[in-house]
Length: 310
Image (cartoon, rainbow, N blue to C red; front, side, top):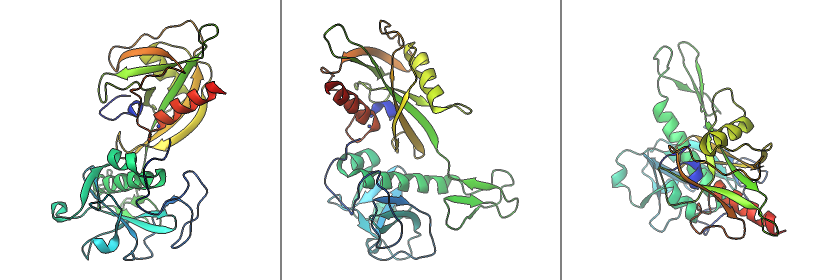
C-alpha cells in the first residue's frame, strides 16, 4: 500500500512533552470520570461534557489545539458546541466536535502527524480517534439501504436506521507492514529489507506494507504484499503489534509483523509501480532516512535492530 501517507512511510516510541494528562500506552485502563488508566475509547452520551473535559475540535483533517500546542478544554469552545464522546484520557473525558466557522476559533490548527510527533502516544491515539469519529459521522449520516437518516446507538460507536433497522458500526481498514530480515554474510550482522515508495514521502527507507483484502488473514496479507512488491517468499510471520494510523486515512489500523526471507540468497525485485527501490541493509548500518519515531514502522525497525545487538 502506498499513498501520501501510507504506513510504510512511518512506527513506537512516545515522543515530546505532555500537553495533557497521559498514561502508559498499552496499559490496562478503566473508564469513568476521574479514574486513571491511559486512553480508553468510549461513546457514552449519558453524562454531559464538563468545562474541564478535554476538547478536540476537528475541521477536515486538522485538529485545533492551543497556540502553545496544549489540548483545549470544553470551556475553551463556544457554548452550544455539539460534542461527541471519544472516551477518557487518564480518567478525564474527551470530546470531539466539528465546529461551524472554524476559522473564527483561536488556537493552532494542525495535522495528526504534527501532533503525534510531539505528543505522548496515548494523546496521539486520542487525536486519531477524534479525526476518525468526526469523519465517520459526517460520511455516515444516511442509511445506504433505504436513505433514511441514521440515529446514534446509545453507548456505541454505531448508528442504526429507524426505518429498516440497518446497523452501521464504525469500521476500520486493516493494513499490514513487515520487517523482513535475512542472515548477513559470514561474521556480519543480519540484514533488513527496506524500500522506497513511488508516492508519498519518497525519500524515506521504509517497510513493505499494504491493505488487507476481504477474506484474507493478516498473515496471508503479509505473504501476498511481500510477494507482489519485492518478489520474496517468507517464513511464517510473527506478530509484533498494532497502531491506529490516522495519516493514511481516518479509519486505518496497522498490524506489524516480523519475518525472515525463505531464501537467504534471494534479492528483492521491485514491482515498479508502488516501489522504486528495495535493498538489504546491515542492521548496524541502517540509513538515516527512516520513518518518524511515532510510527509503528519505526518501532519495528528499531526493535529489529535492538534484537540483533543482543
